[in-house]
Image 1: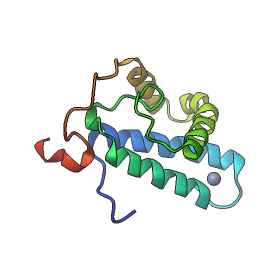
Image 2 (image 1 turned 30 degrees about the vertical axis):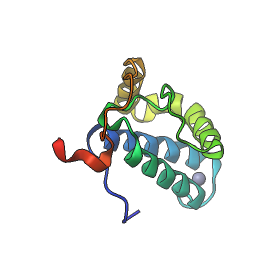
Image 3 (image 1 turned 60 degrees about the vertical axis):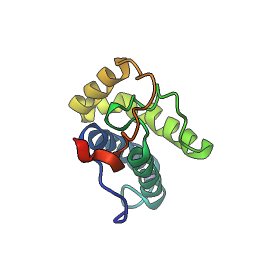
Length: 124
Ligand SMILES: [Zn+2]
């Protein structure tokens, strides 16, 4: 992951939320250290997608996003993880869970602002 640019602002926060969800899911479904290799793979994929998100800091939550940037296999994995970890997040990480629920209610921006992805953050 060292070669990837790092995430900032709401994208960094979203990645922390995803990481927390994956950990909950992994702990209850997989053996060994958490996150396991498979789940680390998934997180790396999610990180890459966040870095490249065309919405940048205005990114809607993934569930509402009109751009389906995940490949089908990862999309299925994401759904399974979110479905399991979503309700449990309220117990384990209430602040994160509530912030995410609030984000779900924000309207989706019309279209990605040009050059808004995390790679072009110099204006912020
Ligand atoms: Zn796992």
